[in-house]
Image (tube, rainbow, N blue to C red; front, side, top):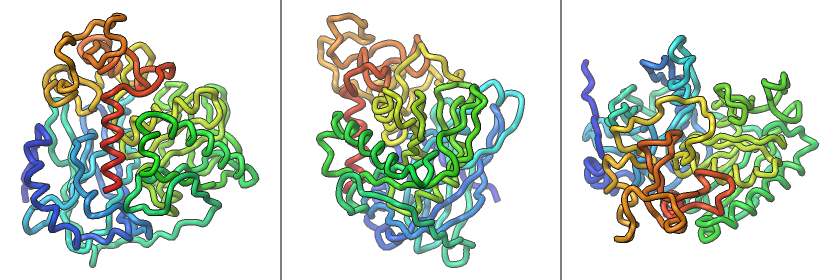
Length: 428
């Protein structure tokens, strides 16, 4: 049977339909149990497919009835749960993947690969239609996967997470009403648990000193889980260093030395099942510069480089808040990552195709568009050319921001607003 396409150009075109369903969704989910959907993305630079590998039930709180449909439209992909009878949208969750990044590498033009992905939702209490959508370069979205799932008859594994030392670093234990950040240890041996907890505390203190986090402290809970590894450190292929660690992290992802990532997504979510988490941060026992962050996936950073606090804040900008990179002079593994004829979904980048949907309302009448990167505008919110790995055609809100350099004093006005919006979404 031919499945109908769901094509969305702008979030506003379908917001009403989803919001009209919100009041009906509360009894349709059990928020004290999580449905974990393990996916496999496969393909090459020109094609992709998505397959459900397994369904897993976890005994961890997943949000509240008010957190089913966000007021923002972030991510290259969306997981959508539909009522199969009414076609109402019961849940929507945007996300990004390592696979989409790999698709823009040279390797993807020659070979096919498969990569793991996990999406978590509250446990449905009724049959649902599971849809995974992908944006094409023009900004339209259409289904890659469309599958009926009945929680009463589907094969759903019950996962019991291992018990490891953990600590509440900051905040209160109220996962339905807090933005829950979970640090997981990577490359720490059991006898290094105290070192891990100290590292988390140091990085958390820095995070909570930054705007807008410092004014959102009461809405944020930070936990640390000391998952043990057999060896200390992480893989560093350029130095021929290989370590046996719990979460299989490595530098030199996609041949970029500073890019610290893990392709072992399911192992990370196995550990995360022990504690509440709106976002996962893998903290790697290393003093080398590096990190990575992918929206609604997880973030990583090395623990003790002198700039690790700044890197953590930057990578959380990606992983938690969907912010794009504002730099354009550093080497990256990607090519043709943005289509200049389409407005990017990242809230802090614009091609001026649909600038009205971005931060135009924040500009004063005296700010020219585009805005010259001169001293006259160094403290202003403007439209400065260069961002998203391109020197021309993409614009950012500030001359300097934490999404551009580690030397920036903090986030710009636009990035702060986006972070604040996401944190508040998880707390209502």
